[in-house]
Length: 75
Image (cartoon, helix red, strand yellow):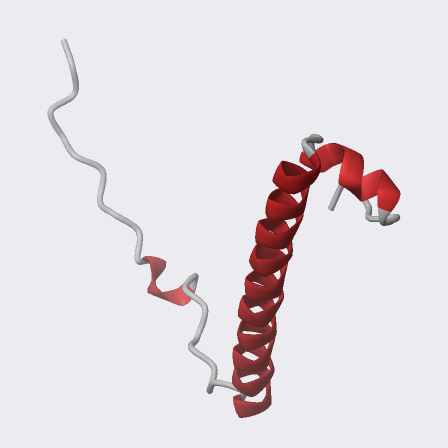
């Protein structure tokens, strides 16, 4: 037979971390980093379009152009 008595819940409020004020410099750096990543991704996308068009014109796989232009195959 199971014990029908429920155990009282412990107060976890003391275990919760107190909220800290947001560091404005950290937020600013994070926003700048995100903007730079967006710019990087846009430039990378444009590069892929150009390489794809060039590969089509030459009739070669895009991968072969990486070696021709000394581009890294792995990010």
